[in-house]
Image (tube, rainbow over all chains, first blue to last red; front, top):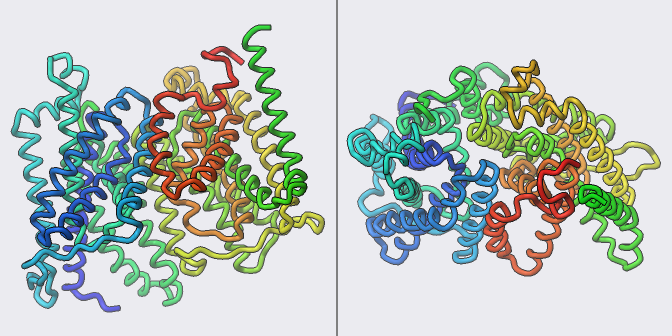
Length: 309
Length: 319
């Protein structure tokens, strides 16, 4: 296999796009972990719900914009209902209880989707006007839709940055992350704040799911692989840090994607062809976890540890 | 009679009764001509070993490992890979399953135990996912699709292909593992682990290197679970990365909590109950998880002490 510069650039962009995807999930999750101190396994299900809402709305209307317009508020509502009905009671519980309860909710949501839509995956096409390619790298036309995903992710990252560092709600979020008890004592309605943060996280996860619809398969259980990757992101970035989540998402996305093309290529150079073909996939599949272990070794609380926490 | 004594008596009766039932079960199934149940209960006992091993670190050590299925996988692949090359020697396979699981647990534990709380849960889960994907990438051994295996060979007289023989073999190992784990948690070592759970700082202050104790507990727990993986590979004669699927790790946690954490016997009961419930509910409807999922929420909210709590003194009375 030949490695050319355009190919490497293309894979880097793919990795960046994947990272941005992860960021949409991990951003909400890291806030929920950091502020509510809640082990929320059900976040992957919210990503899945977003994808299903979008797919159903798309099949009904044929318009991607309608799909987004349905998926975002619907995920927001599901998140809020979930928080009020089930998760709120878990904040005071220990982590084991939270793990079991949210594990149960994952089983429920996955089965619910099988019950309603069957186990097969749902169709969702690329939005009109975005099916084409743009030649931003000479010699390697890049899919327009993936560029749109990157742009969306960056826009969300900027909006979150503005929200958290420039607004009153953001100030409360930051205060909540560093000392929950104190802001409750200062008369802030912390219940409402938690519900709001959970809804925001659910909406971002839903957005990610909706954007994933046309390029990944929308099926039951689609959320858990992303959930576990988000965990890796959050561990690397530091629990509670949105900035850390962004940097770590991009690192994980790029390493994961680029690793898949570069590592087998490098191994072929050093090892015999046969050995490289056996070792290549094995090593690639472990790269990001080894990266996580390395980060933990040097920075046990992640790259950007949230203060207080 | 004091209430603690009464409960102790009830517990002893329950445990002895359970053992008698397990001992005579193959005769009963033969009498009613339902040999299928022997394999089913063999499977229950294998998961009982896995759940009991998890309880050592979860219930006594307070380490919430969301990655215990890793060692089921390592035990399973210890059978599968040797079998793939035509080596069916059970002593060799079992040794590799135990030592391999212990070594992997040492490495994973050494990294995870540097952290705690949320980090610990996420990292144990992540490393098991890594091993899962490693299994998927091993095309040589079937990758995603898994690989068929033979049953292990120990002695001429011990034919594991015979369902009843295999049943008693697993039963014997279950007894050994449970008694061994009970010995560990009752020992000085076990007390240190429990002590570190309730107040790590104090344990360190009085001179115990808690990290090392915990790491050894983590490795022992992994090794015992490796035995369960070895047995599971033998039972199904088929090993896939699914052994290490994240949901398997979750199920093991459910078994421990259902039975009652920090009791060793409890998770045995929990594993059997969980699998019975799974059999029963899935025979009623294929969508049984719709009911089972939310009931986990109810379990943690209202029945935290597990089934073993029913036969234990109500509060934290000493045994």
